[in-house]
Length: 271
Image: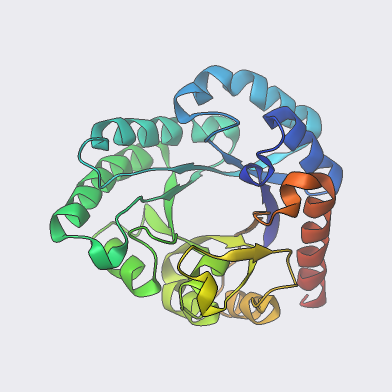
């Protein structure tokens, strides 16, 4: 398994500052988030040459491109499909063949069959583009969206072609929503393409408003067990650190370095 840092962690910095900071931590790879405040999906192609030059200068590999979508909203559907297909099309130019996306709402318990059908038809269009470019799409688990539980994610992905569409597990969000991250790895192992690493407090009082994020190793996630299960199911992909706790805005460099070193040491101990 390899570690990358998600640029979305560092919204207090501009993108160049964020990339330079990632390089300074010693981490050699980034998950490049195509979203505010750094770069929008629709401007990624235009800004691509400059970005790729900066990444090459810093010696950073792009593990994946990621984006937020709302594919079940009929008012946004056409625009969202176009954005996803655009990011899929440009991904190989950044040296990656993996695109991560959040599916959008509504929460799974409130989703109608019609809304799920809108998502499925949108993903069919995106999977066609992925097949053409040799790219895979990882749909991320996310609170208050169509993939807010393991069971909902399983049902949502079932009709979609596994060759091109898999899952990105966000362990903190799963724990805060009541799922067991280790069991989630066992359950989704065959479709697991990407893993998001962050920590949180899992007390029930935190679940209504989303996870209460904290630095890695200080919350309720048990990453030694999660990493062991990932190895057991044969996962050898990316572990993307997203620094979502408040200190990332105040001390982004120190926060990134501490989270990276924590995960790097865990991986070292298990080899």
